[in-house]
Length: 222
Image 1 (cartoon, rainbow, N blue to C red):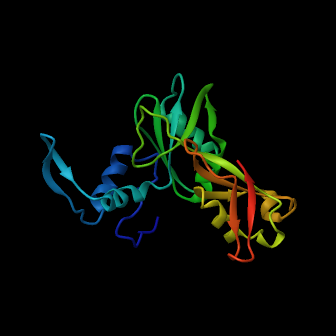
Image 2: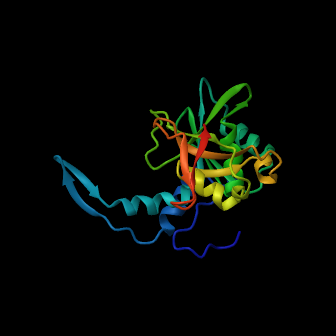
Image 3: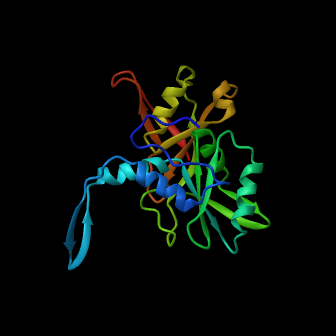
């Protein structure tokens, strides 16, 4: 593996040879200098820092998902073997968050989109739901962010462009991929984009597209 040029490199994905603790330690030790202040807040000792520090610390985990086991969980070796058998295009690391949750660190957007789009897997008859990891992720709460297909109905043909489609989708969340029919324009009656969407919020069902005087309201469905 080549050495990243960034001052804040991603964590190791050698899941079969390094523990999750070692992976975390590698990230911590190689990060650039962090700015924080030791203080007190509401009568308790506190470590105070800005949101930019959180973003810096979270950046290496941008392609991390969480597997939540509903009833029981197989051992980690079985889970890791399951991901090996998926024949992902890049490397990965699986580590234990608690007895029901595992962190799944991925190396590229393709594998991330593929796994998140599925939403649920079964490993030795144990259901594993796929959740999005964020800096605010709490194993005691359900994440409101889910992969949702947005259908742009009767989109004008010349807007079947990857940049335009991702631009439209990014109004609602982080775009992940288009479906095959959209990519090949084999079904021009609708364009579909998979988006990370906060399902706890209400979203509009149309979006303006084009110049102010010559554009139009584009209808969409979730």
